Image (cartoon, rainbow, N blue to C red):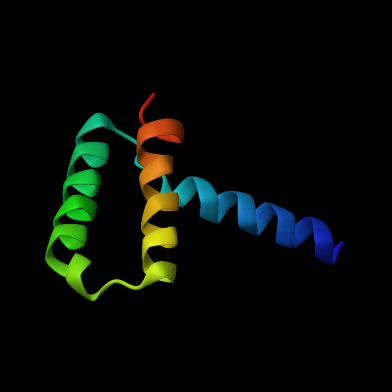
Length: 64
């Protein structure tokens, strides 16, 4: 029962993070790009891995 609850909770969290409208997508992607631009000089290898993973979600999973 606990595993079912955790699975449902994770699924809800994953869908809650995705932009739900075109305007949300554009605003969130703009904020993402601005954050990367402002903080890129301070990023280490792990930060870039995380940023690349989020970028992949924007251009692959969430773009459609």
